[in-house]
Image (tube, rainbow, N blue to C red):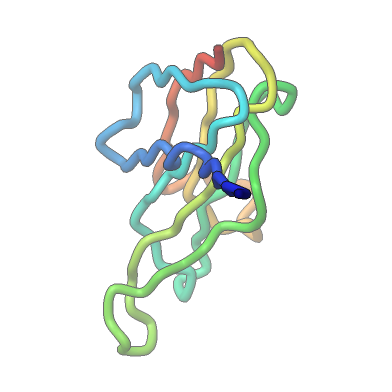
Length: 116
């Protein structure tokens, strides 16, 4: 009699704009999703401003999900990160137009991440 047991990874830790400024503790190997409001049709996008990539690395590209079907609608942008190594890092994201080099970001999001 063969028994197959599937081990599913723990659900990702989900953060939103209200979590900015917090300290987040996660286990090595865990995934963290950051879900922020945005609208790529305006030229703005969320991007990593700073992080220690030996501790936390971005998985894939940011994903946009529109709130409505209307063209040009805003929605949410999801960025995913994997906890790679034990340690502490600040993850800072900026909502900016990549082509506007001399302008400060419209918004920022920052959390302190402690990987154990």
